[in-house]
Length: 74
Image (cartoon, rainbow, N blue to C red; front, side, top):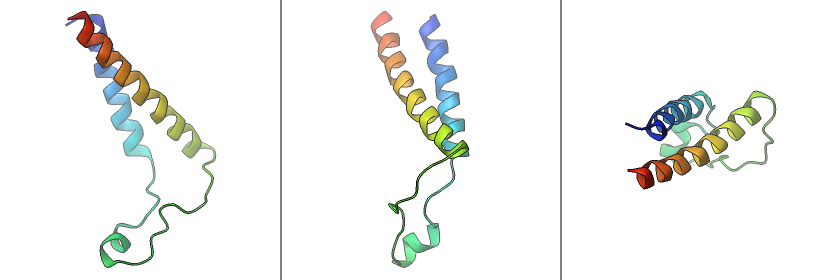
């Protein structure tokens, strides 16, 4: 394993944790009952939610980039 593989492993763990920490925007029960979903309601993320959203986006971009680098170096 080269250095890029270790970075991919760490970024993958960060990505899993950051997605798991985010709160859901919709109720699971309403998804199966057919009620009106408020998944795309206009609510602005603030504070910790905003940080987790940005952290997840940046981590996912870095994750994909490092996978490409890892593949090209093998």
